[in-house]
Length: 545
Image (tube, rainbow, N blue to C red):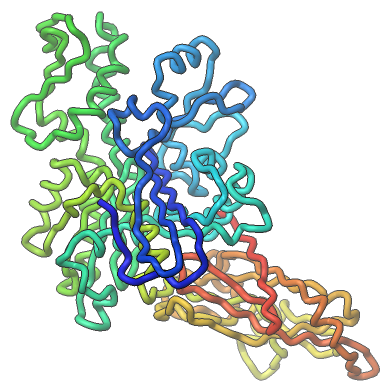
């Protein structure tokens, strides 16, 4: 299916490519934008070694590296028998699930190691190419630091150059899936996203992928990024097969049994009452192991147990959303490759149908993120977001000896270039927690710096700090230092502005004062900043967790 935009394109001609680099598979969609034509989102349907994935439209997220960290094979080519043989002979490192290393602190010991001399974000961008404008999707739990790494990785991988880094756009997988659902499910096409404002209702999108499961509620977005995707079902199955067959004549067949389970049994599993059979050979008999004619018999209840940990995390997260939104929750939308599992869908419907509708797109939901990323680029139906934290910065204030809080923090007193007593480490709020942020709305706050030499004002660095504690932020950050993480540092070149500065004198001391505004634009899925009124963009350096 091709998804069509509702209006003719009026801008400059270009190609926009969406990259859904998943834990187990990758998908690519694109749209050719030509003035006067209605944009049509299409998927990439041909790629090298496609026959090895049964003609499917998704590319396996697998790569082989040698001991020096050089890329030897990638994508469907990594499934070729000749490549696998070379890998075994030459000791190549097989890399998979590498997306789960993109988060600063992976939350599971089950994530495989990366190959030598590689890191998660650069590894992701090995799956990209060409020069154009790109939309890269990422799990809900990723934020500015991970986006910055992805942008740098795109440069290192040759996708873009440093000069054109603005050609990369980001979107959360949950939001991309929402746009796919709105376009592919006619019953939702006329429902506004801002339910809590317009009709008092909320949609919960459950994007169940290979590695992560993202839950996003609209309009009140709730970032999740659970490590509970389908690969963890595979890992539980692998542990079971190892325990059952280790030390038997069939131990060498465990890898092929795991592969067959992933390719067929897991996808088709729906009934925990009936036994299932995994064919791994044309022969093989052992009644004690329930192996007959090269088929391993496995009880449906055992397979259901493989799903238990993953399913438990997903359902618990949904329960938390229902408790948060109550009667406002209108529907649960299931998308992503894992959502194609009949058992997963059945269990979620069984548990929640009495409270809320559970819907799944009729179209290929495994490409929901790639297609939805482009639909977001074209029309962005999410018109506002809720700020999850209070955002501000560290400032100096004039010291007030009549203020008990100032007296209590007297160790923070400094003397300014003008000779005035000032007190530091005070938190100045730019955006309050819970603020409804529009897509293009600017949040402007005036600041200034005073220095004895004008050269000291040529570069301004400002830390953007989040307060993630309970209630209102305290005046002094030292009162709750653990609740004031530095989100990023803005760096602005002020040399042009400094040319206009004139010296001031106070108590025979000469100094220069630079007034500037910090302007934050948070309505997009990326943090953006502007420098002085000249609108020189400030560089943003995110602080890793």
